[in-house]
Length: 123
Image (tube, rainbow, N blue to C red; front, side):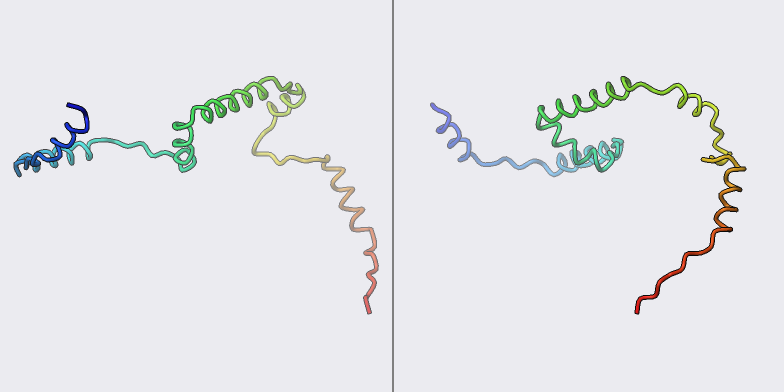
């Protein structure tokens, strides 16, 4: 007997009916299980990327390589020690001045003393 004949004989058999009590027990157990499970909520970007990465191993390998490359470039980039010193002494409560206060006062005086340029009127 080959597979096609077996499938044909199985299709001809009547489908047995499940008792109604079994159906109720199965559905109530499934509902209890569904309520007890805690599902994690993924951020929307990960929801979009997950099927792409799971179905295509080349994509997931490329993304892993990209993250590794970003990490290596970030860790291999030299940092200026002066920049680290500035970060260490930076107080987030104090304003950052690009000029000294005396320079800012001098600039404010120069701006006030300067005459306003004349504007040409277009006929």
